[in-house]
Length: 371
Image (cartoon, rainbow, N blue to C red; front, side, top):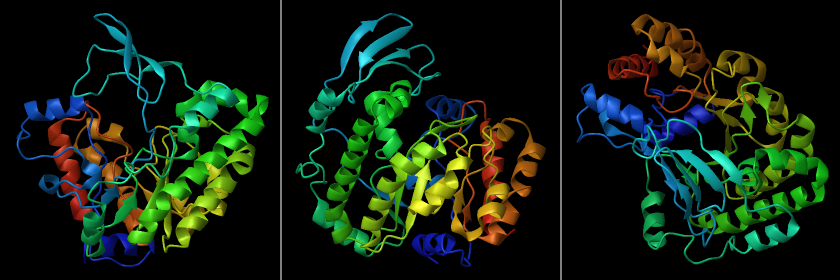
C-alpha cells in the first residue's frame, strides 16, 4: 500500500498492511542534545510533519497557501537586555521573551504576551485589510506545477501548513486569551462578526485549491484547552464556534474532502460531542498530562472519531521498561480497533535521551507492523 492508501484506510477504520508512522518534531534543545549523544548531523530533517526518511517517518504534504496577514506587521524590538527581549511580532502582538537558553529558535519558556492588535471594532476593521483572500501572493508562484505533481501523489495531502488557521487560534492571536474571555460576554456581537469573517476568509481562500486538486484532509489549529479543561465552555462553543466550523466543513465536503481534524493541547473532552456534530472526525495530539486518555475516548466515541497521538512524552524520559509499558498498554488495543495513528502527545522535549528515542521508535515500528 502507498502512504496515501494507508492514511485513507486508517481514517475509514479499514485494514492496512502497516499503520502510518507520524511524529511532530523536536525542540531545538532536544536536537542539540541528540547531536551530542550520537545523532549524525547530516542525516535528519526537522520538519517531521512532512516525513523523515532517516527515522522512517512517513510522507505527507501540507499545501503552503498563505493564510496569514498580508502584509504582516513590521517586527520591532522595543526593549532588549541580556536576559530578555520585548518586541512586536509579525501578528502585531507585543511579547516579552527570555533569551537565556534559546536554541535553534526554541525558547525554554513561553513568551509573555503584553498587547494585541484587536481591542474593539475599529481596530478589527483595520486588521481586516490584511486578510484579502484574493491577494495574488497567497498561492505559491509554481502553483500549476505543484497541482500536476499532487495529482499523481502517493501520500496524503492537507490544505494549509500546520498551525496556521483555526477559529479560537486566530481570535487568540488577534485579541489574547484573557481579553477574548471577557469579550464573549462584553461584546458578543463583535466576536460573532470576527468568526464570520474568519469562516468567509477560509472559504474564499481555499476554493482555488479545492477546485484544483483532491485534498485528503483539513486541520483546524485551535489550542483552546489547558490541563484543567477547555478555555471556552460547551455553551460558548455551540453558540460561537460550531456554526462556523460546520460552514467550513460543508464547503470542503462539496469538493470531496472527508476528514476534518482539530489540533489542541490540553483537555477538551467536554467539547467533543459538539465538535462531532459540527463535522469534526479527528483529534490530536491527546496530551497525557491533561488526561486525554485515548482508550477512554475510543470506548466512548467508537468510529465517530479518529485519534492521533496519545503517547506520553514523560515516559520516554525514564527507562526502557517505562517505554514498553506506555506503548504496549495503549497501541495494540487502539490499532486493532482502527482509526488510530500513534505518536507522541507533542514534540520531543530535551529531557528525552537519544537512546530512549531510538528505542521508542524501534518498538513503535514493530507495533505498526502488527508485532
